[in-house]
Length: 466
Image 1 (tube, rainbow, N blue to C red):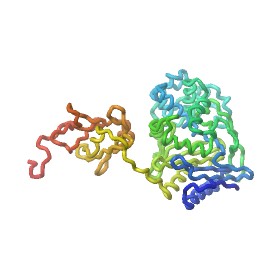
Image 2 (spheres, rainbow, N blue to C red):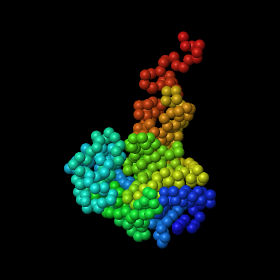
Image 3 (cartoon, rainbow, N blue to C red):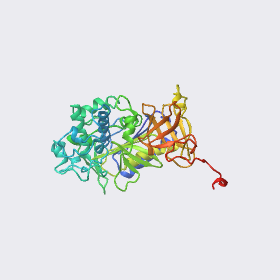
Image 4 (cartoon, rainbow, N blue to C red):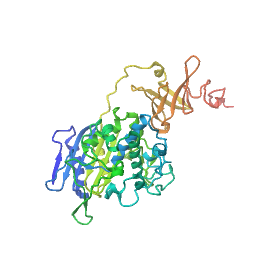
């Protein structure tokens, strides 16, 4: 057996590094994986790498390519979001508007991105993951005569053909093959030099491990053809950790922070029974240990992969293995994040005062009342505001500037809702309007604008209730 670990001190405590190495070794041994590589990054910087190979003369490290399967879908989703941001498509557009005649045209782009288009999970005919893409040269071969399994927009049903359609959409709008568009618009700008359509040495060979014997069988690695946007790509832990940082922070050369946040926002529940998972726009969203992890898992015959990231902890983990089954890569990636987060939590970011404050926003900071519930409005250095209950439970939310003196909700109940200060004829703020909810400076004050009015006698003590 050969092992690999970054020779330089990545800044982690020895006990933390040992815990990570031990967890990786246990996964390789218990799941009988021919080779296994993993990495953890904080703020986009790799802080730990581990690799194990059970085959003599075959080594692996953070630059070794593995097939990443459905993580390819997240790359395809980025391309679709770029088209949306350029105004070439809208997520509410039916596919038929841009790619007519597929038989799945009622589904919107958002439906396809979130797997709510009602399409079949797999292609008709042979098992597409173990057969060459030349058997399915056209979209009709991918969809078949009856592509739908559910009404459009009614249920989350994971669909590989749905992402083939999204890849075809990219090709139709750009006028270039999916692979070429991906390289020019995502891989090169993000410097993902070891992510490719076809394997580039050094790369791992895919194996199946016999369920009842310690023997191996080579798995085929076909060019998936039309199905490529759903699962074709090869990559490395280092490239995918860089991609994970992009999915949290954004990169204006590819997608803004707001657009990748939209991708990470749940758009559909996951499979029935999976109460702690959801699906965004090309990303899986998992509730783990009281926190949220986003990313994607992937598999193809001979390979398993996982990429997960925690925005709160600013941590990401990638796990790649060359085995068909047996290893829960998503659970392992989540555990690697948890080991670091528990042993060495991320240091809070340094607070800095804002360089310049807008007086019309600054006057809004402070206490407000929704009815009798006290809220505090905080004006942040990023130009956004946050509204949180000061006592008891309530609906907290962050808001970003909407460009007209109002703010748009980022999360929670008020996701997408508009927070707007309302002013009188002299320009003084009378109240805040949040999706029709009124926030005032006093709880039911005598001059309150709360709908339904306020009793003219105002607040009274028990002896004045008669």
